[in-house]
Length: 219
Image 1 (cartoon, helix red, strand yellow):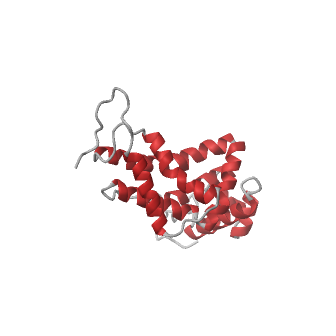
Image 2 (tube, rainbow, N blue to C red; image 1 turned 45 degrees about the horizontal axis):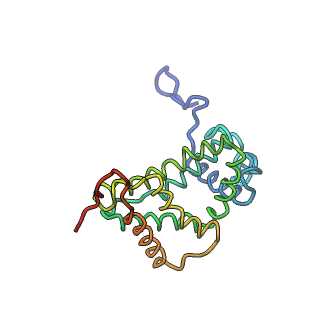
Image 3 (cartoon, rainbow, N blue to C red; image 1 turned 90 degrees about the vertical axis):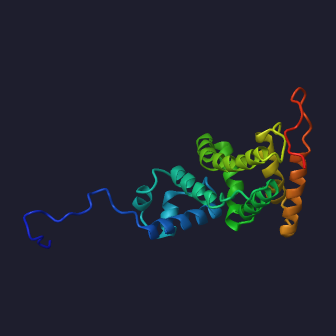
């Protein structure tokens, strides 16, 4: 041990406080998604991820307490990467931006392999379902709700519009086409066409009894 020039001991990192190396974390992240796509959540194991990443199991347990914690953290991190939907200033622009972001997620090769498996597993695993809803669904719905709220505030749609139903209408058609019936979207032009169909649904809302006139702005 090198001398320090006085009688004090050189400082060192306390036991148990090892620095988490970014390159190791990235190797684990890549290994996790590859294992998840190949094996599914049910068969995925800490051992398999560690082996593929070229690290020991302690490297994973220093970052996450369990398989579920690792899965929820990494999946939510990936989902957040697609949540950047800025305020474009119009409902039309916001809906188009939302659909483009959703399209990027649903056509990503890893996501196409992972999403159906996670949905099936969540139906069998209430704890996993609750964790994914908190970490993935809730933030995405919050962003989608902002689109509807801004449209109401700008007077582009009636204030009678039900935000929860509007969010389902916003996200549902694209998911149905790509993930359920497996029909492609033929270019950005079709995304824009879908956006205009959604705009028609939002802006043609009938008046509710007793609510009075629509708050939509008139030109």
